[in-house]
Image 1 (tube, rainbow, N blue to C red):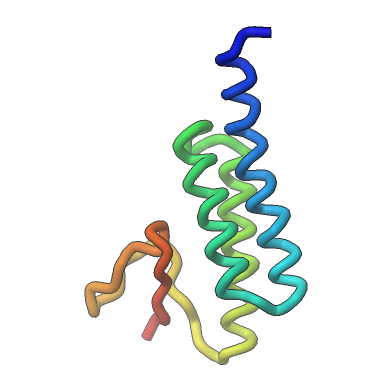
Image 2 (image 1 turned 30 degrees about the vertical axis):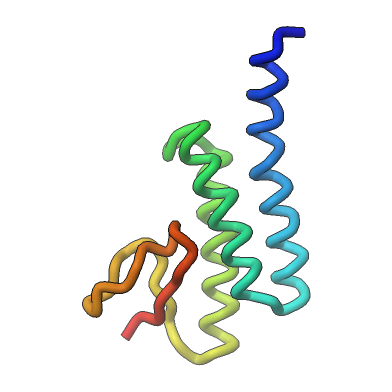
Length: 100
């Protein structure tokens, strides 16, 4: 097998691991850590597969599920990829903000 093939395959496996961990954490009600894990998977998928790939869309859905659970739990809406009016950081860099 060509070494580049192994590297490419491991790059596809890593986001799956992050997604699986995020799903377990979400089930344990550890939303903030689950969100970070799912966001890591999303960043990798977007870089490797592109924003239009179905696996990338699944990662977006996973992030949405975590944010929905956070909304139900905290009674607030949480921003996803848009920067807030207060100039908060980008969630892809590990931070998330509450929407007004």
